Image (tube, rainbow, N blue to C red; front, side, top):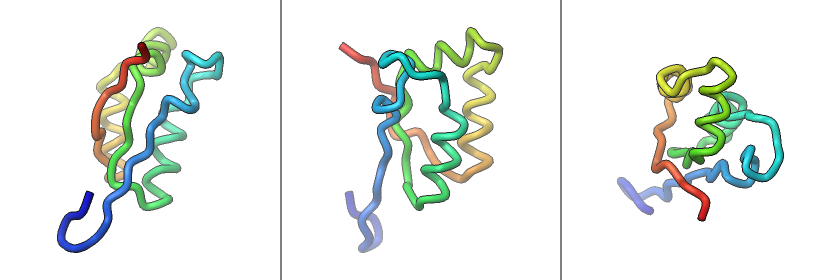
Length: 79
């Protein structure tokens, strides 16, 4: 997508999802995406729920997004 004449990028976290048997890592992915210059990050539901179950509630993930200045472009649900 273009905004103000520049291309905007998003990172989909499903490639590193707990649904694929990987450990939950959304805070690290959020920080890395922001550091790499992405505008949005697409969060996957299984990872959000795994973080919640491990004691990191969705509100803390929202705080992490704000801290790193990156927005959630959408929440993805595997089918």
